[in-house]
Image 1 (cartoon, rainbow, N blue to C red):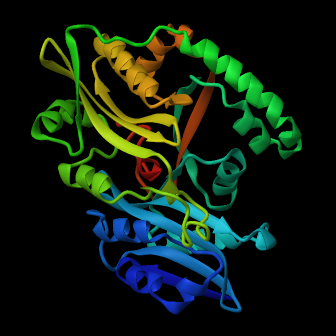
Image 2 (cartoon, helix red, strand yellow; image 1 turned 180 degrees about the vertical axis):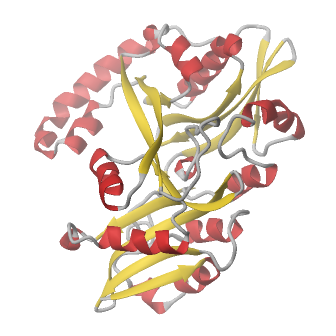
Length: 355
């Protein structure tokens, strides 16, 4: 057994090595390497990738993402992978302990599966810092994809599910299309501008990790998911890398020419998320209509949001959804990371903004 650690400055050499080119499984994609290198919070000597090899064959890896919470340098847990033939041997825990050691027990993670969350709490002494409560709104039928994926035993029923999808979606098409109030207009930006920064500043004063323009620009310039078909690398990398659809845009919403909201929307394979929403509660209806309009234009299958004000008005618009489901997102922190109970974590925090 051999363990290898990689600093930010060593990642480029790794993906150009003969081992990387020949390995059956890859621990990181070129896009994530480029993003790590340009991360405004990362130092070239920060350790971010940990590999476990047996006979020079990759069997496990752990990736982290350098960041800050307040004045504390820390790292977000990112992807972890263990070869199916080597699971339940503690390899993922072993690599995470090495990362904790380097990062002085100052790490956070989110978006865990229930079993994984329990493991981090029991074996790595992580504790729950925040629980976000949200909703997922289903705007299109896609049973033919959903059920066979969750329960392969139902694969033989896919033709029947396809018929249900078709009939259900024909019914949903008859729903009235979203039309914005005549006093409301939308502007889409690729990069954040001065007006947006000034607008969101008061909201960010309440956040654990308020973002600077440099960080916003980094997220946009160096995405982890690239539009395109699967290639030789993406077939060997087990996390998001290539997709037929991945859009991340900032929208400014105006009412009577006055800015009332700045929202970041991601649409990944027809699923819409709202990682960052900035608006006052009295304008929630206008924000909702903007999001519904974007969803309709992109033929979105489901909308996920953890914004309480948005969920309050979305719950009243059942005519646009055939089903909604309550969901929770847990934020776990390691024992030496100091978390202010006066500040908030939000949906886009961590590495989820990239996927």
